[in-house]
Image (tube, rainbow, N blue to C red; front, top):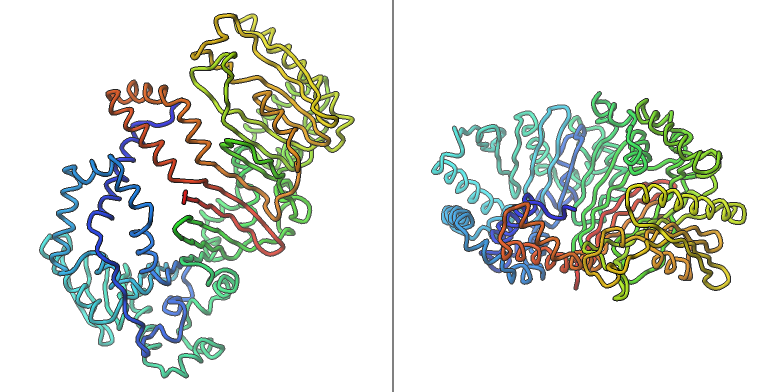
Length: 615
């Protein structure tokens, strides 16, 4: 098992350098003054008013200074600064060279870099890409005109001194001085700095800025309404897809982004990506429904929210269950209402996944979903599995016996002193499904499991492997478990370095309609012994969570093996390898959990990724 390679080692050190650069010279936060009454931003709550209606991508940060302060003054900073790896990073020659460059820049700017940053974009940041002019524009909303001009001039002088600016030229457009630095054009208008790579894009944005600035406030208000549609130079705010985005999600987050899928979908490469077969069964189960939704959507949005304890990214797009093709009905269920199973909260849980996927439908419709190579493999697997299940068709009789809701769980294992303790300690894991007709299927599943154990014993004996011993028990009046345990020899009973197979005691369990297949008998017992089993997950189609505490404990159980692996693969000394693994364990301890969820309702499909920190 490779948990951490040399690339990850270099990455950890690199991140420490970045953190050192960020925290190495932190001055008190700079507070920008309140916006001027006459600012061109007064009548508008979005800089989208400065971008062409043909923009296919737009991202905006409203209060960039607050985001900067949160990131640079985050409580996690003190924990990072206390790390030995951080202290080593800021003392390294590489960091000293970076620090020297920062000091040179601050000397040229005649202000700390953080003050310069907040002066430039403390009040907002907007980035857009225009399909018509094939150009991007970046608008930095700063403190005031004088501060932005001063920083621009000093930055240009710094580029001239260092020779990184190439040939710097200047020109004038509508009374605004613009500079060209290599392929980029830079201009300041009022309290905003514009950067673009195309002259036509820059002219469009400047025209819009000047138009809105010179219009009386009453006219500016009118431009935001129906009258603006009569203007020759409408903006992104007039794009109906952007308007739908704004109504849905545009004003609910610190940072948000818009993508015009209708326009992008006209590009041949994008169209092929959204319409072609995924041709990988696992990727199809994860992304199939999302691909179908995006192929019929006109826009998509992203939102980022930050606070001291979490970071959350949400991706949203319109959803219409009627637009999902028949072969992808397995993904969202009837009328788009498919939801996952809930799981009981078990001690030292490492990972949980709950989802809705009709596996029988995927199996039977594989000809519509996959190419010839994948279907050949499925046909071979179907023949083998049909034999295993005594001639019953795997897709129509076995998979179809289960409801489309399913769940997976992995937990840390504990090994009793009286039993073999493997040198490498793997987590226990299980799949949880729901039977449509439990009375009819229990006997079939029990018999198949026993036959499979017998088959494994026969093949294992031929290869000199240990044998599995079948067992069974009832838990209360509603639960039943069938176990198989590897028979330990006398030398294995008190061993701390037993074989890997002693991580496993494959078992199945039943509780009402619930069916559990687990890698360990203990986990199967826990799952059927818990109450409140089988509830749906609100509006979540899929919900996966990785728990940092469980991950940290599983890695700690294997700490010695991880250290030895680093010594062998990277040539590290034991001290270096120990420091690296302990750093990894310590950093994991800063986190609580990370989760990915997919939910849908009648009008919206939303995917969220969230990271939570320990308080």
